[in-house]
Length: 621
Image 1 (cartoon, rainbow, N blue to C red):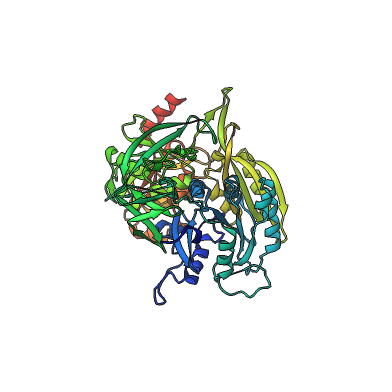
Image 2: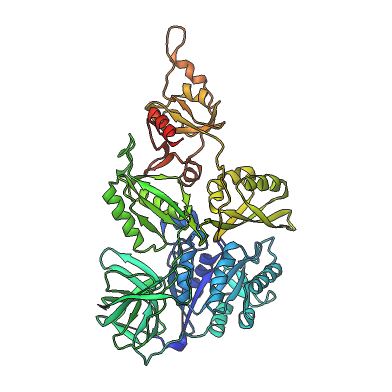
């Protein structure tokens, strides 16, 4: 057991793809967490299959390293804005943060968000200018922009006197000055030990801690994680669990109520060593621990000894969802072919299990006989959940993402807004500004960089971004970079026409034929290839004009003495557009669904029968 003075708790925060997880790889190598002959994969902290495939961190993870008798607890946080709520809660457990900034890109939208949260909690960050060995790196400019950002966010004098390190997380070196010898990670550890204060721990007072992160285990149930602020807890020892709640979600300092207390028992206690959780008999103040016992644990719960006279901790703010969609039972003709179609009861149980660890998710039963409404921080967060469910072998249908609106005190309609930062070559800036103006975006800042790239900042409604990413990559020939973050709610900006092309909808069921697809590809872009099984009501392509067109991709050419079946060998077909889950969610219209299965992603009409669709559209009109 380490004494409190030898413990340091830090979180690594940054914009997506600025090198957080790669830096931790180098920290592990420098502190010899693994054996010399151990086979270690890159980005070892990204343990999830989806995290490795997409190259992003989805959930916060804890690890611990030892250096010169110091125990350094490190939390790797997500960099994508859709998972920013994980960062906000984790910061309550640590005493400082390592702010990573890319030496080429400088501070980005998510950098602003995570830094503002750290500064508001009174933390003194350590700035790491990463990737300084890249050809276009400009570390001095990146540092100047970071200082400007500190000043803009209202940092005090102590926070402005932050230590600065330069280096390459990939190559495993950091230095305090660019002229220093570029070997090893010791400058980082020295800076952490010198600049980060030991956790405020009162060993002589009764046990007390607040839950900041949740986990779930099918054998032990709910697991709560947090930092012990005073006293110690032993395995099997009783404690009081107190639940609190804000009277109004927007309040941040006062106005919260105690919902009740219950006596519980600490069944298991774990601490982190390296990447592993180790069960211990006792944990003391300053430790970041995982505890099981209570059946239901919520973010912000206070665990305290019955002898404690201190009031419970104020509740932690849980980010509000901004986007919702319906998760529906798959009732299509091909249900059960590729996986296990979920019943409504199974679907509800799976989503409720997800809420045990993902507190940013909301699941509502609106009385529909075929599905539930699920809300989250963004379409990526919901797409990740759908991907996890289909990898478990499940089948389901999901609707188009919709933004969650609210009303102010005067009854005005409000919608979520985002700050969008785009970097494109100068030749593409015109088409980008034109397309975003149609989506109600306001250009707030523009700068031309030395590399001939234009950096533009927009304020745009969240619904204006739905379906734009694929269009943006097409317009910029894949050379553009875009990043956004949620900034709050603003007045409704009017209707947005996000898709100006219709769908090609199959009228029959069966395998698609090359003969008919050759004719259809003249009318638009196909999603299917010859031989693909389609059904009545399935969307098989994108029409080149507004409005849907019914079609029959299964029609075969009549054979006779004059026209033989071998004449099909002269058919020339374009490569069909691949339909992935992310692209399908962005593309579909309000009357369409994505059928997600372990083997296929299909797009279909919500009402499969063409005559029934016409009746429904007349009623809506």
